[in-house]
Image (tube, helix red, strand yellow):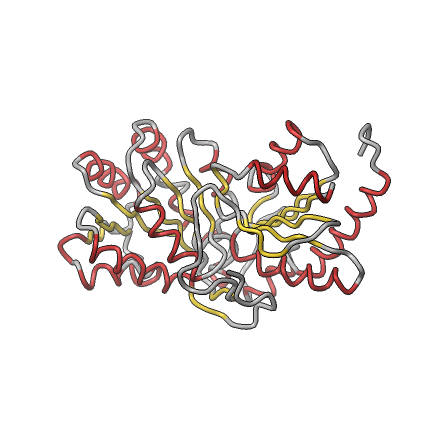
Length: 325
């Protein structure tokens, strides 16, 4: 399943998403696609090119777009709703919560340009609170994919998965981790690399940086497991607990705020079920415009920082006696 631990090949996540939507449209006539005048950016326009009668450009009006999707879902359609993640989870939040989630409607919300990936548009377009917002909504499934192949697989899986879902998609080309046709199950994490000393759990495209850090750690004599937790809600508690008990140390990595996001979701499992040393790596401030890879490094998501966090958590584990951190 693991294609390239070194992450040397890159592929477009949004292009894979758009192609998967179009392919889905050929086999599932209930699928309709809505977008907020950003179809060229999200690549949902690839669906529109083939199925214009099932494709709706709602203009820059995210709230009305989601309202319309709710109506279509009530009539038996499966809407895929597209805009930037930051606007999906802010401007459209009212109907997402009060109509789609409250009524359990079968609407798939695709939040593009997540994290810092819309790098040159700066903080106003970067989504660093969307996971926290969406995972608190009852009944909402939350998925964050790590590469193009996983994006394609997620589209297929979510089309068959009942109820509302939020799919987090990066704007930037992502290092290849999986080949096309990879095994993807909603709610089940993927073990990318086994290990016994520390567990790195990532979500989204930073999983590739977790793999880079694991390679660095190996040179330091530290055996790191790497888990791709693509489904943040419902989270794979059994897999988290399995590796918590095996390695006795966990570090989470997310392209998102450290407050209320993916790391918080993992911590909720750990604190309730098996308290061990844990660290959360994420973003602690608004970012800025600039080169995407440089921004990731500057705001704390570089493989060197991940490596150091793992090294420190292993040291903490050695002093851990179960009664203090």
